[in-house]
Length: 250
Length: 206
Image (tube, rainbow over all chains, first blue to last red; front, top):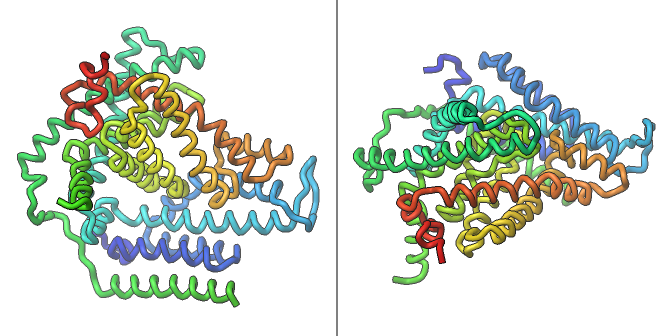
């Protein structure tokens, strides 16, 4: 059981918070606000004890994308207010403003969900979805997928080595390398498909499809603070959107 | 039995236990296909083979779910590209419908199916690229988009052009791979799948 106060929250509470951040940065058209939101996320990550991991993920997944998106807007966004030129490009105020806004939003929303998955076990999140009405079979599919992926990755390496031993070439021109694709993938898929029949028998022998209520060994606790926070985030998000629409119409 | 009841029952039949168990395999094929394309340094992604395969043999709804789960799992590690989940889901549905129409039975038809899936992918992913990312997503197609922009195209033209260029080879080849793999799946298994019967060896020979 997680001892950290933030990590101990119900998965849905954390998920609602990520949705709240998304709604907030879309509703408030200011890049300063969205960058401030990212700063707030850093503080929350630090409080949850995942700052280093969170920051590493943001660096790995977002930074290159943000730079490219920003340059694209700066160089190509149509506008009249010219603030400078570089080589064949003209830089406009509109491009700069839109680049800052777009990147700040991607940063805030992207890192909100990165943080969500750093402080939430996928198992807990799926369980929470199940409590909200996801069929148990669906939950099984999602969780078994997470187990099967690394297993099949390992197996594909084994098959590729086996095919190399048989003389299938994996180095050389694009065409030679492309020819190694099917001999690796086909045996993998065929053996995986064959295994589903066995798995079906195993599951049925444990009454998987029986039309009864399933008992779960894994339960989630939903405390009053979760209900309170979910209400707060929901009201906050709705209020911001209503405010935005009101400003827009009036 | 009235019509909606029939439809509901057929919807549930789509999700037989074997079809459900095919979903994790389909998702894993997407990941392994992508990994394999990287290891072999192929210039295409090949990351929707599983979605197409599941759609083709188990029908559009199971294909849709495979796409949804694939992108949801990617989102655990990199949530930024989650908006593209719509593309994956549409590819699964399209593959299912094409299979239902018998458009994966022969090689020429499979190539046609590949073009249809390319069209579906482009029409759905280009607006996502423009609206969510301002036209650039940081992969090779961004460079192509930038080139088109520099020649004076609008952002929509540039993104559509570059998406078509990067998608067409990828999707047509993915469909062809599925076409060949389906032909090597055992009749015993195909007979249990919704659209499997038409690909069984004894039904293929005319």
